[in-house]
Image 1 (spheres, one colour):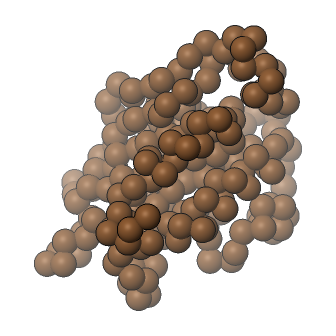
Image 2 (image 1 turned 120 degrees about the horizontal axis):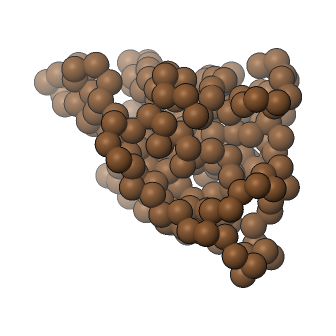
Length: 203
């Protein structure tokens, strides 16, 4: 990868982000498509396909036995935050056989949301490692849904082994305001890094 692939969308003559790309990643069945659909102000573009027996040996349905569709390319949505910020959302496929697409999806992104399921936290490790290794700013959003176990932030941080400097938020991927708060949290994190002297070019 070249360093020019990763740039903050900051106009040097302005102090506000005008438009930004965000990647939403995480394990299989964690709620990425749900989050994009909940928050997008346009009809989201999805690439959901019905799961068949052909994927039985590849897709681990533990924890999501009722899942009948899966993302085979990406999800895309858009949300306007305030009067001066448009976020373009790209949901990455969670299955390992589609991870080769991640290198393309994260090009030009200011940062990423790693969506985690408390029932399968280890499924988040590949996403966390991916963005850590590429020095892409990210936060972890733990999808808390009805009937999900509850843990403290310290316990979740320990289980996910994420640094103190990485934000960890609780959210409901089905709820628009909750999902929006996660995206705003990521933008704030990216801006804080920039203001603390993080390089304007990542890579």
